[in-house]
Length: 330
Image 1 (cartoon, rainbow, N blue to C red):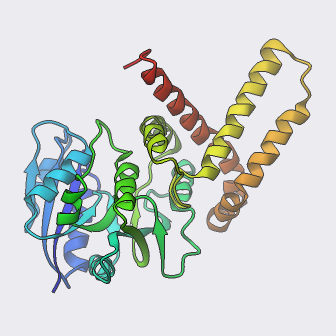
Image 2 (image 1 turned 180 degrees about the vertical axis):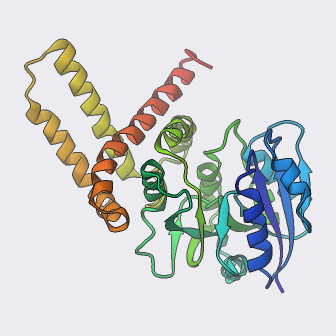
Image 3 (image 1 turned 90 degrees about the vertical axis):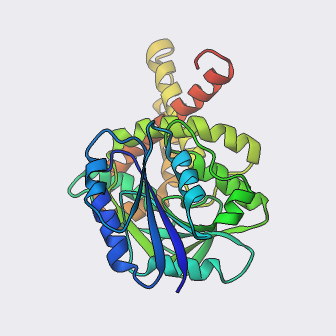
């Protein structure tokens, strides 16, 4: 049997942590595992819920350190060389950990193997959350067995402890997001591949659009610096793609046009506005088809609106990055 340390970072996960852990225990019995839960100073009922669960090792941090720190701490105390990271709001498929490990151990050129998310939203009957689900899952549906990826799938993946330590571990930020891009770049530069396999999958609870909007501002601010260093966009399925950046540029031009038209020069023809909207629709066409497939025509129209909100988050995150670089804000 494969031996693996399953590391679950959690912060305020009272609604999902019990289901996440019991599912791992029940549906992944074909491995010899230890389950390490790093409670990142949660201020809800997470600690109490964890104390009621059996056969897990609980580490309660005295100060909130961020998910990257929690992942590194888990790796440090893990007794096995195989590490499996699972986010606290995930429901993973049966025997998926062993499937990830089998692929990781198939050849020495693999740095990490991750699962692929199913287009299914455990947050029920919420249009806003369904859109976030679609944006998160888009790009994977045509994969037959596996695909190479440029970002470590930090929410559910396996990696060797000695390899992770060799390349410097997880970089940690004050809030979640950005770690997967940065570590993915270091894995790639170490001449190892990141693979995602369809045989292992997961479902999760997606947040609403405006929660996602706020996270994207923070995540974009972090990602811009990583992008400048690595000098390439990420593969389809990641949020940080070339197509997404062009779509955000279209939204920026739309905002700029409307400001110019209604504040400075009212005579600008609307055909310019329509041209940018048409260009953006072409860029997002495959995603709009994807949204129709799962949630019907109403989601297509909602997505056209929601795309602008997501792109506005990217634009604002870019501004925050440059303002910090210029020392206007900290």
